[in-house]
Length: 68
Image (cartoon, rainbow, N blue to C red; front, side, top):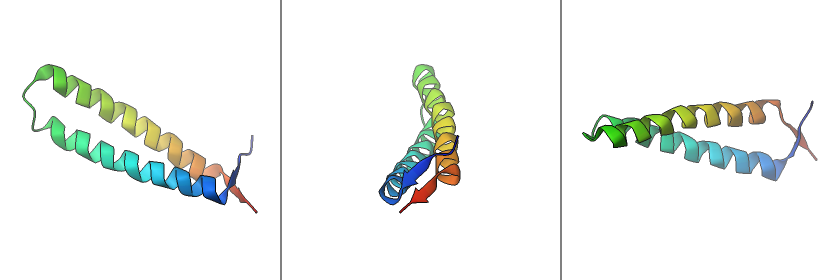
């Protein structure tokens, strides 16, 4: 199934992707700095989810074509 994305939708997806990458970097970095096991587990879950979201956003950007 082909997805038709308008230019503004692609730009929005790119902005979200940039934000998700920043969040992933922050969560990954913070994991090494916290001592609380519960907080570490929350950060690990965020890293796992973030990687999946980034993969999905990249797929949308790669497969979506720009409509005029």
